Image (cartoon, rainbow, N blue to C red; front, side, top):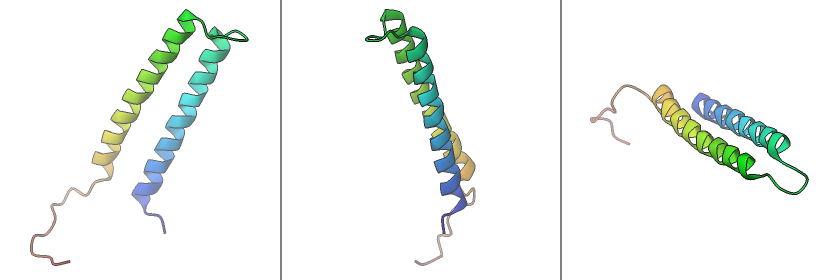
Length: 79
C-alpha cells in the first residue's frame, strides 16, 4: 500500500507539471508563429521555466517539512 506522504508528493508533482505544460502551451500559442517563438516569447518561456524551478523547489521544501515526523528518533531503539 502506498503511504500518505507518497500520494501527497506524487499529486503535487503531477499538478505542478500539468500547470507548467499549460503555461508552455499558452506561451507558445500567444508568442509563437508557425515556425518560431520569437524574442519576446523566448524571454517569457525562460521566465516560466525559472519560475517553475523555483516553485518546485519551494514546494519540495514545504512538503518535506509538512510530511516529516517532528519527533526525534529514539536512540534506545534497535533495528
